[in-house]
Amino acid sequence: MDRNSFLFCVGSLVVSLLIAIVAFPYVSMDVQSLEAANTPRPAHEMGSVDVGNGFGKLTVEELMAFYVESPPVEEGASAPEIRFGGC
Image (tube, rainbow, N blue to C red; front, side, top):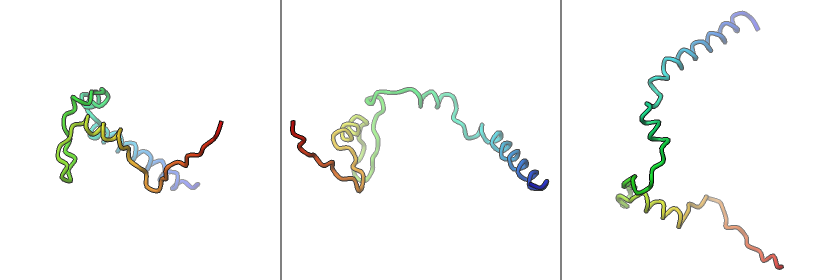
């Protein structure tokens, strides 16, 4: 590797590191938001969510119940074949 290539690689790494150090405070979450995101809350405390498309607002509990009763189906996935295995 010649000297110019080596200097370009080292310079690129240094500039990238400096950009990351300068930009990090602007893109990181504040402490209160981070603590709120890591603290679980019961579904009844979350309120309502506007799901749109004419469905209006639904509570998080209703959305969870719907998901449990009818989970999403992957496209292309078929139902498992049930075979009688005998004794």
